[in-house]
Amino acid sequence: KQEVTQIPAALSVPEGENLVLNCSFTDSAIYNLQWFRQDPGKGLTSLLLIQSSQREQTSGRLNASLDKSSGRSTLYIAASQPGDSATYLCAGGGGSNYKLTFGKGTLLTVNP
Amino acid sequence: DAGITQSPRHKVTETGTPVTLRCHQTENHRYMYWYRQDPGHGLRLIHYSYGVKDTDKGEVSDGYSVSRSKTEDFLLTLESATSSQTSVYFCAIKGAYEQYFGPGTRLTVT
Image 1 (cartoon, rainbow over the protein chains, first blue to last red):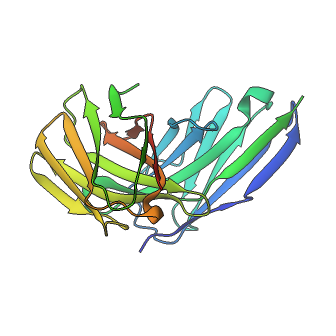
Image 2: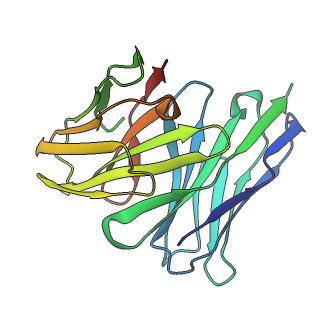
């Protein structure tokens, strides 16, 4: 059974700082790894998807990496802004029917 | 936006009553999913569908049933709601590779 862990549970940084969010998973037979953003009281917004055959994906100030052998993914946010404040979730996809297993998230606060 | 809507968006119901939540998509995706989100547990898969009339259980399926009679609609039913089913319910679809989520339904069982 896939288990996904996100560390830290909460992170507070000053504006402009570069930061890394961590995600680990137990089953290396992962189909893909997806990162989401969730604002309070809102739904999930997909940020980046990394296929199992890929090592990283980039979108603007975001870069996500995937290392299947170590069971880890990281989300790098460059030059953080107060608008980046949200909960970030990672989810591992695997098995038949593309089911996702979620971590519990990292609550990010970027202080002006 | 993957054209996913959920209804109702908010609902308060009493213990023991049946409740049906609806997920509607406009883009003809084959795979649809129901998750619940609870503090301390994150998002957990309840049921999923891989085609019309093709459904299967997820991690936390007890007390829930689903139906999919049309590609665009995936219904989640709580046969007899309990307080432990108070949660936020999200529907998702699988696009080419990614899953996309609906806006959620906040359900309170009193």
